[in-house]
Image 1 (tube, rainbow, N blue to C red):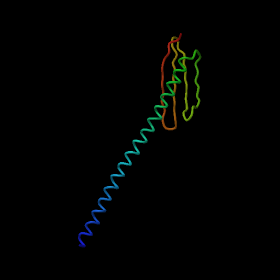
Image 2 (tube, rainbow, N blue to C red):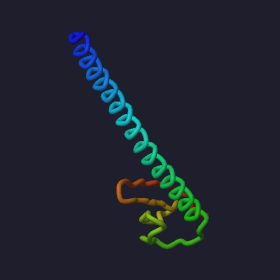
Image 3 (spheres, one colour):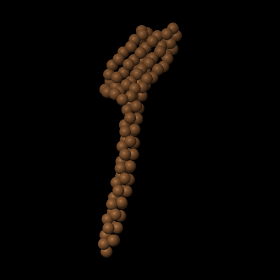
Image 4 (cartoon, rainbow, N blue to C red):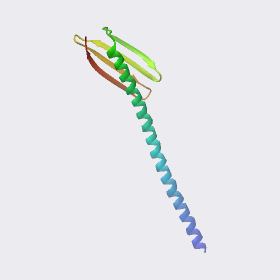
Length: 110
């Protein structure tokens, strides 16, 4: 009987180790997926903000070169407009603590 008791203890320890290992691997994977999802949500929000600002800049009738920096929520925004002979160069940079996105377009002058 004593041999079986020791064998059951070893089996229990090994199975506990395997279960702990599997739970650790799964939780690590879920944590990585969650952080990627959060980063992608922030990037999507930055892109949408930049697109809306570019549309506002396109519809602006202002013909002067300018550079403006301001903050919207947790994002810093830099707007740069350069007028060329036949078009306007619009550049917007949206940045947060961890990432930044820059969009640039040209608009034909009216």
